[in-house]
Length: 138
Image 1 (cartoon, rainbow, N blue to C red):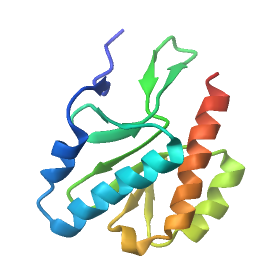
Image 2: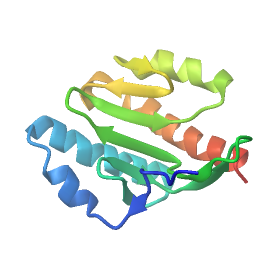
Image 3: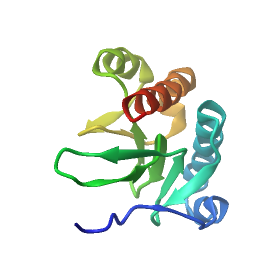
């Protein structure tokens, strides 16, 4: 089986975020890191070369594929931020309805800037993601 490309590493999160050229996006990246660290209780770590993750869990699928992934994460993409937050299906919809301006692609939440979303709801989503994944992958 192929090795996972996106794994936790020792690259500097601060250096990665400081390389974001757009000032607003750079500040939002640092704010997202602070929010996710506070709410997850885990230090920010780089996953691959473009994902900032918090905590980790080990998954194993029925297919036999397994690996590690962050409990909560984000990535500053060229047009927006991709938020990687998992929730129970029943809890996810009400949170998304109250999050603010965002788009979905699969399970990924895309936001252009933090000013477009409700920080309190984001904080709830981070807590929910950590709890959901910890419970699912004990």
